[in-house]
Amino acid sequence: EDKVVQSPLSLVVHEGDTVTLNCSYEVTNFRSLLWYKQEKKAPTFLFMLTSSGIEKKSGRLSSILDKKELFSILNITATQTGDSAVYLCAVEAISSGSARQLTFGSGTQLTVLP
Amino acid sequence: ETGVTQTPRHLVMGMTNKKSLKCEQHLGHNAMYWYKQSAKKPLELMFVYNFKEQTENNSVPSRFSPECPNSSHLFLHLHTLQPEDSALYLCASSEVAADGYTFGSGTRLTVV
Image (cartoon, each protein chain N blue to C red):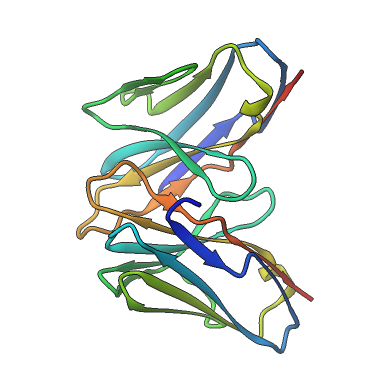
């Protein structure tokens, strides 16, 4: 059974701090690892990392994938109050057909104080 | 709006009621999904539809009944639910090679 474990479960920082969120996984026939940000309801897509793209960066956010050690980290530099959210990690296994099934972790609740 | 629209946003129902959740996507995606998100738990995949055909049912109780009449619409019919079914129900859609899913804003369901 595929498994995703995120740590820490919650994190409180002040504006300007740098945070690192962790995601470890076990999956049969790994296809990709995805990061999402969930503020109110709809999770919004941040990054997808695959064998061919093990490091991604967008503004203050960056993520790396270590396929050997089966983990990923999400870094946020110079945090802002708008970064407060639950950050979800998910892994996708290779499957037949076009449907894509993700296994999610429990998320990390990040709170950025002014 | 993300391109995936869910209605209603909130629903309170009794254990003997019958209600339906609706999801609609206009992204041209060919796969649609229902997820359940309970407090303090990971998102749980409930159903997968691929080109209108159900390809996955993750041991979901029969009181949840999905319907996918076409590739743009997905329903979740609810009947004789239990209080532990109270949760956020998220719909998502995806394309084969695209990055990730697109989620709807969800329906917050409370069973009383």
